[in-house]
Amino acid sequence: MFLPTIRGIVADLLPGDARSAGNALISQTQSIGLLIGLASSGLVVSTIGPGWAAFARSGLCATSALLLSRLKTSRWNNAGAGMLSDLRVGWREFIAYSWVWIMTVQYTAVIIAMICFTELAGPLYMSQGHGGARAWGIITACEAFGALAGALIGANWRPSRLVLTAAALPAMGAIPMLLLGGGAPWAVLAIAIIVPGACQAAYYVLWTTALQNTYAPEVLVRVNSWNIMACYVLMPITVLSAGPLVEAIGPQNSALGSGLLIIAASATALLVLRLTGPTPVTSTAPSQGASLAS
Image 1 (cartoon, rainbow, N blue to C red):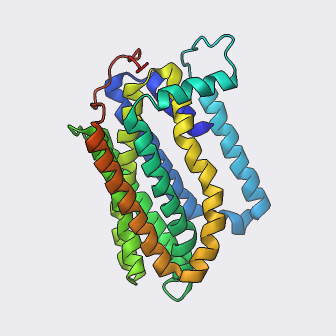
Image 2: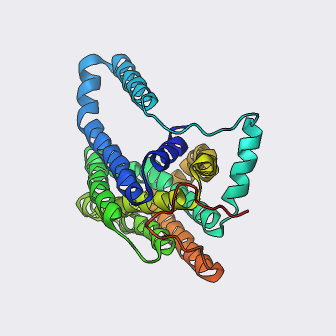
């Protein structure tokens, strides 16, 4: 519920020209939180134990919910509307713009490849005498450092073709996958993963801003729900099916396949977007009552 909602909150609270900065700030705080977690999680668990560490995490989540509840946002009139009605409205608006569902399909494929790489192939490769857990932790931290820079770039970047630019950025995620597939040492992977980390954060800013500039706030959250749903539905399926596959073909071949999947998905999305002619979306948003496709 948090991810689709927070995008609507940003659109509701900020005017069009400030939304990219707001989205960048969210991306940066997520990266900072990841870095703090990587640096402190081991110390916290070893000091107070896993049970109390989990309790502390729940306390942080409760604090986050309390802070969000203090935000003063618009109350849209949805009297008489139920969950199914909201889903129908969200689906109608989701498919109204071809670039939205094309990029959703693309990023679903990207997420599948990233899960296979970050959750399975990468850690397994490191455990086979290539640096171990410490090396993988450093690689993950480097990706977060890249995301910090990428969010700043995304906040100040005004590409003339926002949709096409955003669709090209996920392809950079293939770089560390192809390097791991070629047997690169962990230090090379740590340096290389800074690039996709930055591109992923810039993608989040551009993609989220494009959605906020296209849809009226009262339907944006519903559209975001459809956008995220495919990734969450496929995530457990991917983990369950990719585990035996990685074990059978090895982490290097799995990483190589993941990289090729990202390249193929990004190239296909760019080609289809060029052929269909995506609706122009600029970095400067219209008013909150943006017109929607019927």
